[in-house]
Image (cartoon, rainbow, N blue to C red):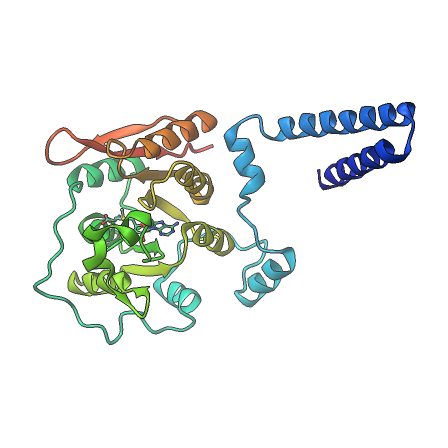
Length: 313
Ligand SMILES: C[S@@+](CC[C@H](N)C(=O)[O-])C[C@H]1O[C@@H](n2cnc3c(N)ncnc32)[C@H](O)[C@@H]1O
């Protein structure tokens, strides 16, 4: 593709030159050549972009780090081609993600008295997840955790019921709405220009006594997906609840579905509340020919949680 672009540029230059110095035949020949190159390039692009999901494969590969970097990182973490996918132990998670064995919660007090409002979906999710997996999940990823409402009410207790772990991926920088909207400024509270939202999350986990189950991974969702691809950890359940922007959710679906073990569950929030989420989930399900299940909240008829079970091939 790059070569073709370069060739096209060259042809265009030639056209310009011919227009200045060549006769009519030379100009015609250069025009024909440029048109032929453009047509070929368009055809090649069409081959690789027949569906949005094929384009995602092209633009967002799971292993994006340069080969050289991946090799040395895997060597230092003792991950070889032969390393089988496995559930991380607590020690392994602490050693790899925090470069040691100390819990990130050491020295943190709770915020008793600032109890989080209970998240809406709980029991319905517990039942469906346990039925689908045949057991409670051993390793859960929540993408987008905010103050920890969902992980404290649902994902943490769900993982803990099987002595499992839950990793929460978030930048704790908020989305556009949170960064600019007046309603979020109390939670975001900037210190030296940086949001302190993450500390609310950490304290909520301490307050709920979930420090041995729930851990933070403070980075953008895309980077976290690539990090998890390097680590080869087995993931039973992924809950996507981050930016909800059109296209952004599709990229996350694409990246995180690949990380999920066969038979695992990909689910997310805001089916009803965010048309952009609905759009991307439907598009993704069509590309992969998978079924979308919708769950009602415990209270009332609002359907906000969607679920895709990854087929066991
Ligand atoms: C709707 S809130 C999550 C709510 C949470 N699941 C709950 O149940 O309380 C969205 C969160 O996604 C995070 N976020 C948005 N875009 C992100 C991205 N690209 N990568 C990582 N986190 C992101 C924001 O910082 C915010 O905390």
